[in-house]
Image (cartoon, rainbow, N blue to C red; front, top):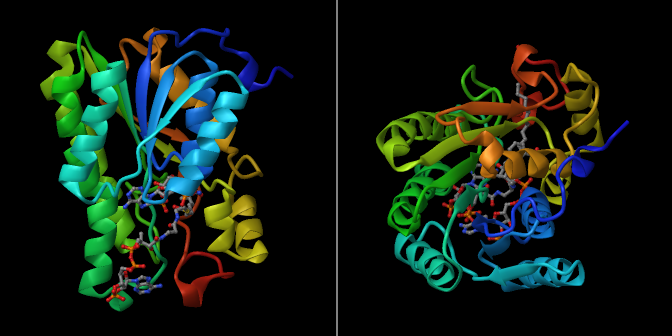
Length: 270
Ligand SMILES: CCCCCCCCC/C=C/C(=O)SCCNC(=O)CCNC(=O)[C@H](O)C(C)(C)COP(=O)(O)OP(=O)(O)OC[C@H]1O[C@@H](n2cnc3c(N)ncnc32)[C@H](O)[C@@H]1OP(=O)(O)O
Ligand SMILES: NC(=O)C1=CN([C@@H]2O[C@H](COP(=O)(O)OP(=O)(O)OC[C@H]3O[C@@H](n4cnc5c(N)ncnc54)[C@H](OP(=O)(O)O)[C@@H]3O)[C@@H](O)[C@H]2O)C=CC1
């Protein structure tokens, strides 16, 4: 079978300049490496410099260009400055809001600071970066936000994250409408479970096996499968796709909601 990664021709994204948040690890790193391989110049942020430098080395070894600009996306001014610095040197045709995450807790155990941390990272930072990108796009652009499948139906143990991702879904549609006339497309990609090092570190083999069994296509999502879809949505081939929430989840959204509450791990969802 042809692998997804064989579909695009080399140079398919020549001339593209894309900023990826959380580009040092996991899904963000896979996205950065793939876009650079297809010819885009990629800028990326994260709080830590070291993972970004590792992405830069991997991209350079493959003959691509990656510009690491460490910053905390929850600091709106710092994020704005990082994006502007990248755009001033390379232009800007795409933004991928990938930085995100949450802890797992029953709703009654989420304290105000925990709620705020998850909303700030997964929703408010996305808005600030979209807003910052808007005037930097010249002649159109494409914004993608990495969300989480099933947010529209709910999940147990992730109330803060489900609320934030639902906010991103609404934001995606609102911005798609406001900016369509300037050929700025705004979409959301909602992955199912992806076995990245970060998720492995926050889960047990038993939980991952349960999530795999609960996925109609009986395996977890590969980071490369998300990256390939990102490449497509950034390309001119997706020129009429905007305002969409697009799932890369093996059909997970059709199955029962997941139960990620610490006390519920290992049990079937209620
Ligand atoms: C159908 C669908 C199929 C689909 C099925 C899909 C399954 C799910 C798959 C999803 C996977 C991923 O996203 S995995 C990839 C992403 N990686 C992660 O999620 C791991 C990283 N997580 C984090 O870094 C943190 O959780 C996060 C809050 C986001 C960032 O935090 P910060 O660095 O700002 O903050 P911290 O100082 O650590 O914490 C801030 C506050 O959070 C609270 N807090 C932190 N951990 C807490 C905990 N376990 N329980 C309660 N509260 C907690 C405390 O109140 C802290 O405040 P004080 O203590 O008062 O200071
Ligand atoms: N893995 C999975 O199963 C799924 C993941 N997702 C989502 O996909 C995205 C990527 O996940 P994944 O690759 O697994 O996880 P990672 O934890 O590896 O990726 C998150 C990245 O974001 C960066 N980041 C976190 N907080 C900030 C911040 N405040 N400012 C700047 N950068 C930050 C991290 O770098 P640093 O720590 O250096 O800041 C890290 O590189 C997340 O939004 C996640 O919620 C969605 C569905 C499923």
